[in-house]
Length: 419
Image (cartoon, rainbow, N blue to C red; front, side, top):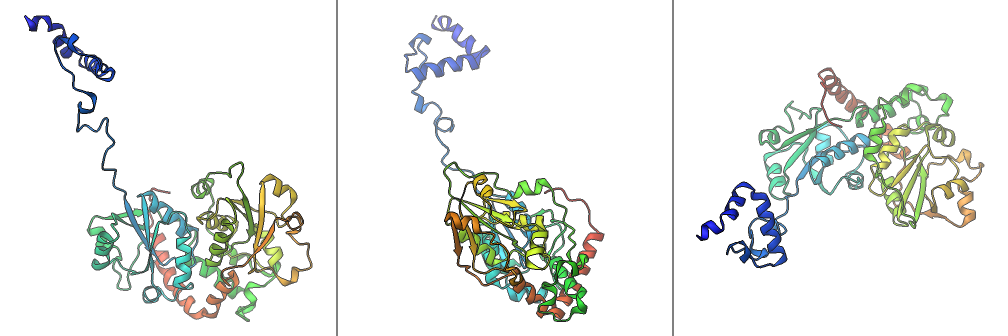
């Protein structure tokens, strides 16, 4: 008889389980007696599905994926930055190994930048979470074990261009064999070899290479051969968006402005940008166009405007850039960008020939919002270039070797998806 009385309940459960379940859940939520349902008891809500995880936050959160990418990162450029950006997209945390000077010499030739300078550059990138100094050029069994066990690395990343050891074997063979290797797309149009080539080409094309320490970097724009400044980079709006933070300053943010050429982006640039950022909430960087640099420094920049813009945008201390900023900081600029402070470093390549010109910072100085920052490092684009010029023969040999491998890469190149 009891079954007959409650038959409608059982029919409801069978034919309309979702509706009936909803009614029971509602009853539980309201704390109502369930005697109406023919003596069927509904347990208190906290005990309703104790292991289902519906009403309780999961105790164990999703494991964060840690990825590793290494490199020499000599003459750091936007191609390196884009590679690390792509690597970071394959995981949650990016650990970067910076190859030691000794390993670079043994496998590629002499590096231009010291280990300390390369560490500053890599650490200054917005996508990098951790850095391992003096990493080996080859992923050995011992180092791979250290990556997996000590650094908790899930995947090892490299570009689609081959990385070969002096004996012709693949430096990442063990990682591939272990099934812990992922590939990204190489950024076309630039490489450290290409940049060294631009500097050496400029040297070779000016007066037969005489006065190697100064001539090639201090010629007038008219005397500079255009061939020395060609770049294969094809700038796109998508790439700029990928590098950009995509955020503007808040309504009450203290906006700090610094400008310059930022050619051959180096450790000195990173350190001055870091110091400038600490003076406010938002760092706006003005990057002079090629013509402005040429006019006021007496020589063309090694990297063109879009290349220099990407290098600066990749820096973790930079919030926004003005691509092709004017030479003078005007009242209109200060108002438009709500600039609170204009800064300039003490180490500059401002050509002494142009010291009679109007001071580009006269407006912010008159407003009392200009500050001269002590440059943390005495490094300039010229001093970096002169390291290459001073070791002309060694870098010519290095570039000839690398040029052959790059030629082979482009001959066998196929389309690789990615960005």
